[in-house]
Image (tube, rainbow, N blue to C red; front, top):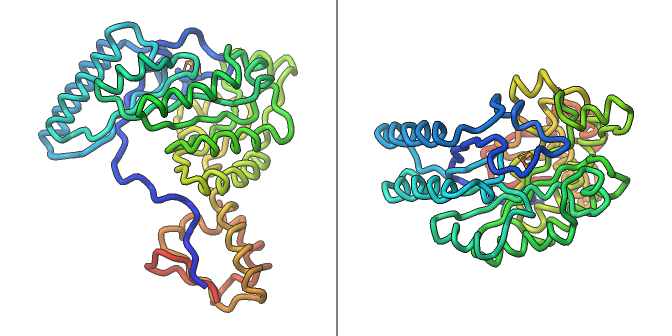
Length: 338
Ligand code: SF4
C-alpha cells in the first residue's frame, strides 16, 4: 500500500526574521525570555529599521529572494505609532522590487482589534501569529497572561475576519497545567484552522518571574519525555486540519541554552516528536496490512528523522518488523508498504 506523510506541504518561501524583543509588550510575561532568545534585552526600533533597510538593499543587489518578512519577538500591533506603519512601508517598497512576497508579525491576543488589523492589512500585512499560549482560563490566570480563553478565541476570529492568515502559538506546560489540558488546547487550535502553529513547551529561563516561582517550588515543568509524547500526539491533530507546524520547541540559541534552568530543553525535541508521530502512522499502516511487512519504502527526505534522535525508535520499528533489508529510503513522494 502507498501512503503519504500526513503533514501539509511546507511553505516554499523563506522567512526573513526581524526580532523586536519586547517592543510593544505591555509588560514582561512570567515565562518570557525574549532577551535570552534574541541576545538583546530591548529593541532600538530606529536602529533595527536602518539595519533592515541596508540588509534588504544588499539582498536585492545580490539577486536574493523572494522572502517573507517576519516581525517577531514583541507585540507588533501594539508598537507605538508610527512604527507598525513605518516597518510595513519599508516592506511594501521591497515588495514592489520583488524581494519581499509576504509580511507577517507576532502579537498578543489582547492587542488585536478589527479596525487596527484591517488597517495593517491594507498597508501590506498578510499574516498574524498570535501568542495564544493556552485557551484555558485557569492556565492563563496562573501564568498572568491577563486575558481569558474567550479573548484568545475572539482574537483568532478577528485575524481571520480581517482577511489575514492566522498563526497560533501554544505554550504547553504553563503554571496551571493539568492532564489533558494541552490536548484540549491543540483541539481548539486545530478547530480554528490556522495556517501555522508553533508549539513551545514551557521552559524555566534565568531572570524570569517563572524562575523565581520554580526556585520557590511553586512550579514543576514538563519532562522532556512528556514533551516529546504530547507533541507527537498533537502533530496529527493539527496536520489533519491542514495546519503546518512550523516549530517544535525554541530554536537553538547559545544565550538561551546557557540560561535554561529547567524544563524540556533538548536540541532534538522536534525531531523526536516528529519521528514518534510518524512511527504511529507507520504502526497503523502495518496494522491495516495485517501481517509483518516485507518492505517499507520511505521518501528520502524523511531519512534524517525517521528513526528519531540517536535511532531511539529503531527497537520499536524492529518490533513492527521494519528493520534491516525490509526498509529502504527512496527518491519518492509516498511511503510504500508491502
Ligand atoms: S510573551 Fe510575548 S507579550 Fe509577553 S513579554 Fe514576551 S514577547 Fe511580550
